[in-house]
Length: 278
Image (spheres, rainbow, N blue to C red):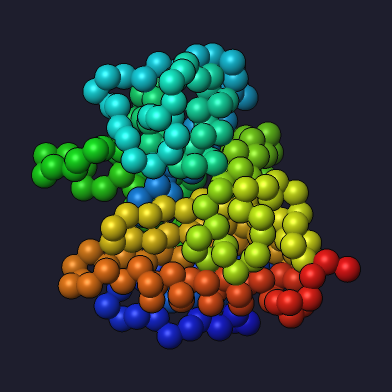
């Protein structure tokens, strides 16, 4: 292993795995099989199912998406604030990739069917990782326990396979990566890459190309991704939960994530942090 894991706040539960995206060799890990609540991360499996249906013709990119009244939600995203909410399938998926849009997520889950979306992770061979439920404004005891869950090992693997264009088909993988290229949340591990958070679909600072997805709640931070540089390519998953902690641990958690991100940046670029593009 060649990427150091920093001291981690033991009040949080962690699941971490970073691998060479070409060889699959582990570069860093900590409790990679621990199951964490992963907030919005499971939306990746929704995007995979939508991309598959676009490829096989069950959905059309310009098809309008209906928003079921029982699944109207707010919070993460932009659609709930928009005056015109008549989105196409493609644009709803783009909002999920770009701003983890909850309302667009629920509309697409309803369109595809929750059971079919849940089955994607199983089909890909994952036992402890999945999108589990719709996004809810309030999660009561009679509902599924979390919108998504997963382990560092399995989440790093799905990003590695997407980067290798091995998820379902090359076209499906490419489409999902295209939606994730618009992700505007570089507040966690990816902050260390120093990319333009609003515009990094192409290789940017120090030649890094990033495709990633994040998830946040009041007790969780998760960042999973695939990042290519001039020296190496890695897939990573870092999840932290502190549901039972007495304090809000986002500061030490995000600090550790940024340290891991700096290790990844140095590994994939082979450059010092302040040496820009040549």
